[in-house]
Image (cartoon, rainbow, N blue to C red; front, side, top):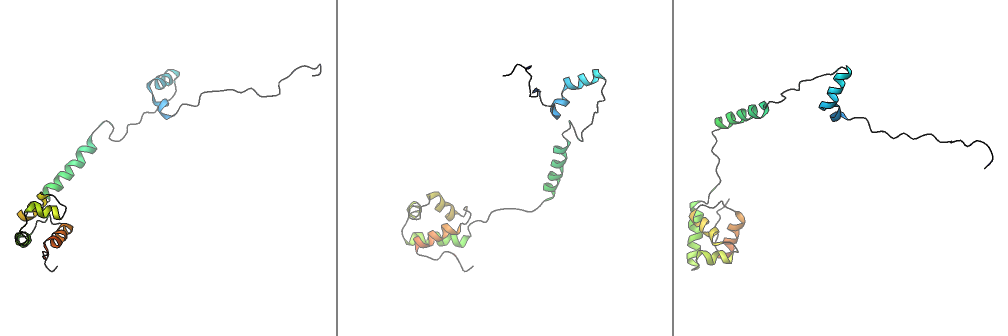
Length: 141
C-alpha cells in the first residue's frame, strides 16, 4: 500500500423492506395513517358484498325447477321371467341360494335379491348364473 489516502471504491448497500402489498395497503392501520396524512382514500362497495343473495337466489331457481320436474326416475328391476328362470334352474340342480352364490363367488344376498326381483340387473352376474346353472337366462335382446 502506498502512502495515499484510503478510499472506498464500492457503493453502499441499502437494505429495505419491500413495498407494501395490496392487503397491507387495505388494513385499518394503513388507512388511518393515510387519513391522518391527508391522503386521498378511495372506498369501493363491492357487488353483493356482505350479503348471501347468491346462495339463496340460485337455490330458489333450482327448487322451482325440481318442483316442476315430474319425471319419475327408477332403476330397472329383475324381470319376472328372469326371477322364475333362475329359481327353476337352481331347483333343477338341487342347489340352495347360498350354494349357488358360493359357486358364482357372490354373496347369498345377491341370489336372494335376484329371485325376489329387488336386484338391479347386472349382466356380469347373470352371465355367471347362466354358466353355473347351465341354462340360458337372458332372452334374445
